[in-house]
Image (tube, rainbow, N blue to C red; front, side, top):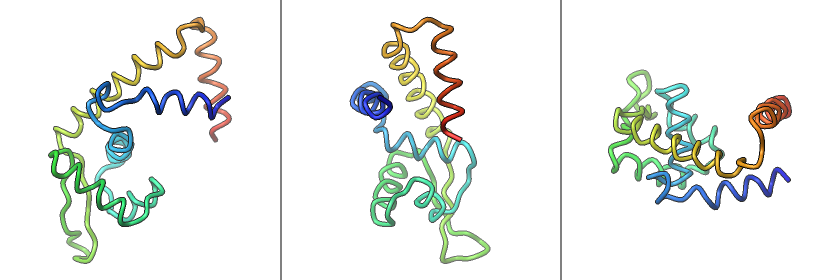
Length: 125
């Protein structure tokens, strides 16, 4: 059931609805939770191979949502940071996903939603 739910959310989390792609949202969300981060950390946290990670970072940098700069402690590494435009895009995407969640769980009462959220939080640990 969880896989079906995840598939439903993924299919309905379109770029048109959210303003950005789901994978872009995941990266922005990761940076928002602990920015700035080393590029390698971002790739590992999102389970992306280096090539795909660089392509995704390039997209977001071209959009003005992230900035990459050399790590002053080690010039071989890049530090990735969320921009203000990136925060705004992430907030817009999160609001769209909340609306999507409301639609998907419309058949559940507020109490049932709270119970589901609690159970999923416990299972995710």
